[in-house]
Length: 206
Length: 138
Image 1 (cartoon, rainbow over the protein chains, first blue to last red):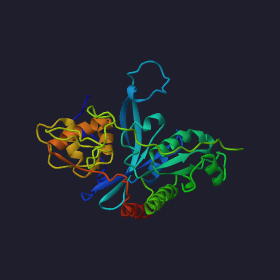
Image 2: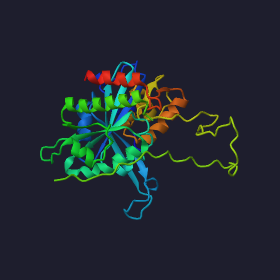
Image 3: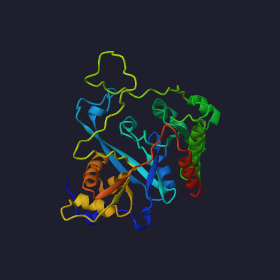
Image 4: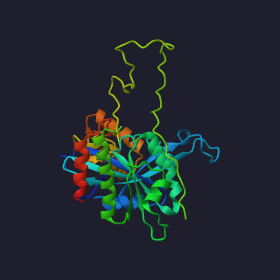
C-alpha cells in the first residue's frame, strides 16, 4: 500500500479527543435496509462527524446462497459508518450503522456479539427488507428495538398493526421516529436502553 | 392496505465447536473435568490480542526511529485514547489490517489496549444506568 508520511494522515480535531480517563467503550448497532436512515441517525446524535471503517470479506466466507457469478475469490469491501457519544469521563458509546449488503453484516466478527443491543430501523414502504435481519438478531439472542423512520410519503400503519406484521414479541419496543432529529434519535436509543435495563432486571439477558 | 408479514425466529444455540482430535468416541465424561469450551490462541512469544472495533488504544511512548509510517501514525493519533474503528477510519485501513498493526504495537509495548465492555450473561445494570444517564444529557 502506498503510504504517505504519518504527518499527512488526518486525525481527530483537538475538540474531538477523548479524555485520558476514558477506560472502556460499549457499542450499539443500527441495522436496516438501504436508505432507511442509519447513517442519518448516527450523525444526528454523534459528537464527532461520522467516520467510516471497512472490512474486506472474501467470497469463501459469504455462504452458499450467493448467486453472483462463479469467481469465488472475489473480495468484497464492507463499510460501516459510526459515531461516538461520551457517556462519562470513563465510558464511551459507539454507534455503528451498517449500510447495505446485509448478508455481510453477520460475518463481521464480534460486531453483534459484543454489542449492548441493536436498533432495527424500518421504512414502511419496504417493510420486508428488515425481516431477515430481525430474524438473525433473534437467532443470535441480540436484544433489539424497532424504530419506524417516518418518511412523509410512506404508508402509515398503527404501531400495533406493525407489531403484528413484524411478529414482534410483546415485550419488544416499537416506536416511530424521525432520525433527522437529534431528540428523536436520542429517544430511540433511550428506548433501547430502557428495554435492556428491563431485561437485566428480569434476568433474561443472555 | 395491509403490511407484509414476517415470522419470528427462535434463538439458536451457538454453533458447536469442532470436536477435538483426540476425543474418545462417546466415552463417559469424567466428573470434575468439564470440557473446555474455548482455547486460548497465541504462543509463547506473545498471545494475540482480541481487538474489538471499540477497544480503546493509547500510546505508551513516542514513535521509535524504527517505526513504520503506519506505526508512527497510530502512535501519534493515540496520544489520547482512540478506538480501533477510529484508527481504521483515519488511516483508511481495513479493520483486520488495523488489528494486525495494533497487535504488533501491543507486543512491542508501544501502545496499551483498553478492552471494551461486552454484553455479559449477567448484565451489569449499573453500566446500563450509566449509559442511560449519559444519553439523557444529550
